[in-house]
Amino acid sequence: MPAILIHGVPDTHRVWAGVRRHLTRTDVEAWDLPGFGAPRPAGFGSTKEEYAAWLIDRLEQVGEPVDLVGHDWGCILTARVASLRPDLVRTWAGGNGPISVRYAWHPLARIWQDPAEGDRFMAGLDPDRFAADVAAGFEVPADLAREMMRHVDEPMKDSILRLYRSALLMGAEWEPELAKVTAPCLVIWGSRDPACPVEFADELGRAVRAEQVVRLDCNHWPPLQRPEQVAAALEEHWRRHPRQEGGGRGRSAGS
Image 1 (cartoon, rainbow, N blue to C red):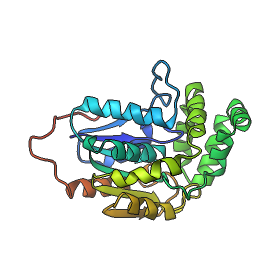
Image 2: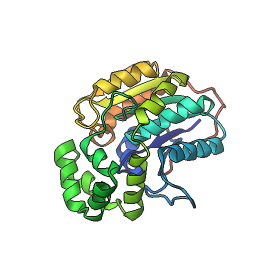
Image 3: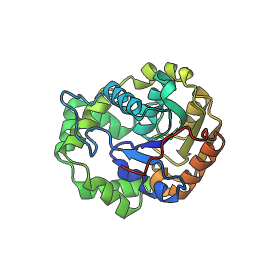
């Protein structure tokens, strides 16, 4: 019963590196979404529905329910998977990814959702300036912000635009299905997130009947800003739901 960690935007599996260093279990994998450090399958349109379907297909290949974890869009997509295929998810944890009809997309998301403005933004993207903006606006350590931006290539830019343009009504479309989540849930949220206000942590917690909502004193990226605390919260969550002895395959940590 491995743990699967799913990143957000504009990230790759690398966003989980600090958290993984603080986890004691070794059966942990951090996956790259198509277009985010991994190739996009032929015909893949990078919509939210396609990402959810891709995750379901990958999880089916694991062959047993997993401990599923997501941040940002990883939170949104994994919660969607947990609502559509509860048989694939042993436990779920996620944060800083609102799934609510009441959530208004943040200013940068609205730029990406506009065909003209979004294309113009990506065409003129300066990685150094974007990294500086992430460091200043979201309190991400400067070296980690630069590392993040180093992996923002053309496929990722296109995938971001397609994903956000598919999600104009994501809250209205996906929020009602959260009632179908059956896995034990944990919400972890940076309490000073300007893009995804902490009030949506409580809302998501209620929607999935979370056992706990953990608010960390940080901004949008708890995996980068509070990796030790994120790891501790995850391991406490997993300890509350012990894995059956002999019920899982041994897996090495991987990306």
